[in-house]
Image (cartoon, rainbow, N blue to C red; front, top):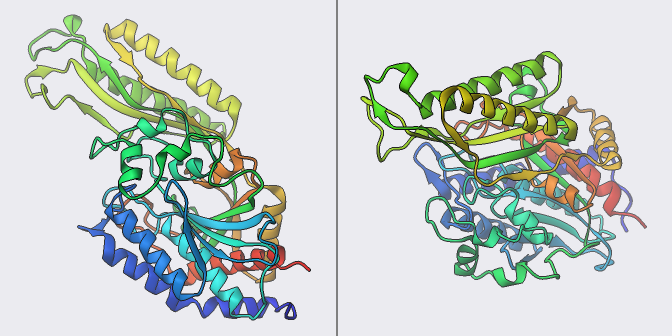
Length: 432
């Protein structure tokens, strides 16, 4: 093995990957542009383009490229001991409709650039495989499932997941996987694509999804936790359709009932915020029934989705109790019925202390400006943590939020995050 490079040499080699990272992201945007943003539908054309683009860049670097039964892509720098637990980096390549170019994709190109930087230092082969994983279908907007690709790889897909239908095509997840050459039948057995022990650690780089780093004036953060959640993707209120002139005492107004729920949940959120207990409520869909609504009609049905998240299991349990108490009161007052529909959930994930310490040490040794940050959003790293795999996260500054065309990431900030990744891989993946 070549002499251990200095921290400054690692930083210089990462900086030399500016063209690789910038070119990949530019090509990705151009190939998946949709109006002002990009659309990379899970198991659709845009996501396929992204995975093919990654395969081309990886092949040009002389790395191994494989896909699993769920069509997740693995870019591998082979180690001396191919049977040893691998170090993995990566994120997802799908997007929300007309979203931004960097959500997910920044983490994939970061892993690729980190490998390229370390190879450029002439270190020889790592002690174990180093993998960049491009994960399918992280955005739950498409199949209303959390962490679809990563849970498929880890053998953790819920039994009903392959029957879930994509919201725009109404075709099942199994159909979409099979249509692209995958093998959905292999995902419900006892032999997952990533068997226990295959991955020794997973670190995900991602743009921040609230402007905390912008506010702090810092380029990166080391992640400490990913919130857990419970969700009701297809909830509704059933009231009674009526005439616009109907007096209030005779009304069973589904729209006002849903609005009362929304305001009640916001009040609960304000209580928790005042108590410095982090949580969030999101009502992503909120609408009357387009088949029957009108200006002179009291709505008899109102549809909505609900995501409630927090960083503590006791807090989540308490929030769910408050939700049902709130609903019971509204039903009694307004003579309506709430149908919450299917419930899904995702566990809370905390960064592995050893990985977190190593990432923090790397940021210090590289003389970077950084902070610790709880993620407000869900990430594939949580699925790896739920599988018992040690995980960590690095966040990159983003001025304009996420899931919108205005996502903004300076290439210098991305390279700063890549330097932390490369430092971690050098320290863990090159042992005698």
